[in-house]
Image 1 (spheres, one colour):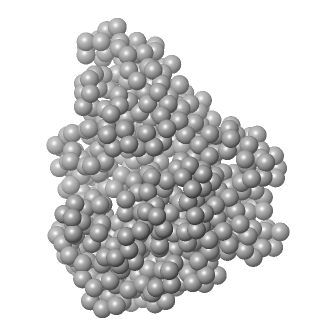
Image 2: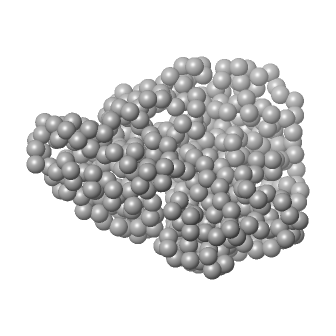
Length: 520
């Protein structure tokens, strides 16, 4: 692909996250599948088997099959195999052309022109055209309703289908994170049954979904990447109980168990292999800042001092976790503000002093709501409850079903405190934007005008060095405000049968089965 002068200028001003890596990814029009980045221990050691079926354990049900409505990271984890956007992420967190073959960005950063790849088909056999892209991204931008389905598309002024293979997206303002938003799913024009029978262009097509039980996908024979996928069928089996999931794996009923607890890895025999690495996920205890006493910064700071994160990492993650101080993982090396993890060093006396200053000398009682399907968070809650008891805070742990957590806590903001893992994105803005005062997903009820101004400035800043400083400042504001209790980026542990090869870990919340294959 020949890079235009406009695009060279764009790279010079550094307005795109991961731009240098993206240049190499765009150099060829043949899509990549990251075969060289496989991380499992037994990779291609034996003869590959053509086809085959596998079962992957997941701990949560799907919230929506429609990719434009889904908000749960666990849903995106599975649907990653069904849907694609103009661009697609790889295992390094870079984005590269997928449905698009090439693109140009205007010098002012307002116009994005994409040339679509030849031969891309939907799972219903229809060829993909620019009209499908326009329909999908108009829908996300809320052009018909006036209410964007995705905050990232709120900056879209208009979308133009110039011809069958050319799409132009016009923005209202320069947006340094917009390119990574174009990994969002494209669906057929006018298709209204995505939440019943989803249709995408990915390596696997939808077969069956049984709520609370399983999602079944089959190989898409007309996928545009040669010899991909290898497998004939993938079943995501929903098992919310960690012990039941382990038993299913041991009994041979499942082949891959992502996010298996470290202690459970030690219970597996030599017939299994495993991989473990940081996952760009932030585990945190969040406060409902609109509710007393968490509207008092002194109380939030006291809780931060009262919790020993090192003890949690050792007790719950068996040492396999990176301590955090704000809502960004060190995986984002250039944007990560070092040192924040030590802002609130474990100090029981300091915590008691702050509570007394806030008028809670004898402490108080509160409820900690935890999604019951995530044993890791449940275990973390138990450790935190014990630690907070030492400063007079009596914690009642409330296990809640995942659907209840999404509806009552995440959407309804009806809770005192909760523990959750916020999944990583492809750029820092999409991670931090949930703290904006007017963000729909600001379930913390956090409001800070300085934070809003800082993050919004970072979004339109073309100078990379200045943008980095703004993102670091935004992280620091969150930490100083004790907007939450940031705990760790826990390692992602994955257990696999020995006859599985090609498994690749990502720094985002996905399970990519397109590279996986069986061996003899």
